[in-house]
Length: 195
Image: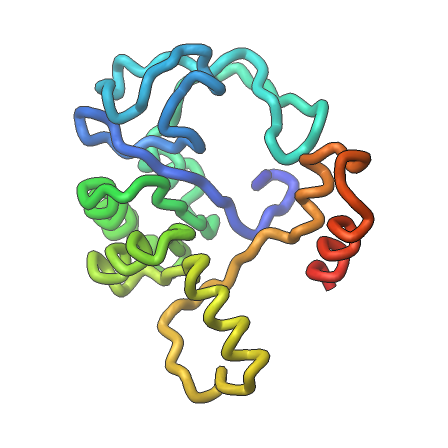
């Protein structure tokens, strides 16, 4: 992604039994490694390698493959891309994970090019309390609140501490589902919400 000019990497983090922060979308590794085990139940050295080919979840009939099948550590990503902005999704409500991610961001002096959080309001609050120098993103609850405040005209009167507003484009749902299984009204609502 970086070689073709992406503006920001988005990645998900979990923590191993020996307190290593790893980059993985799923806590359970069945889909990506073929082994039905949770990251938090294993030491880093015990993690199974990724499968040779992985389905791309947001694009049908598309797979990715690579030669390095190791699950990467967050610090390795920071070292490989020292100047690339990174959006970190704290995938589980785990105080130690939040603390360790904060420590790594500080260690690599990335506060100015890192944003973190989750769709969960509780996780975003914990991130902010752990390190308010790292910008936070809007939780789903706060996204809905902001939209409500916007449409009622009250938004200018409410303080906002989040710095990043991210919501998936609803049309992505059309790519993931079989279009023929959706009603015209569902398709219309998705199209309308993308505008």
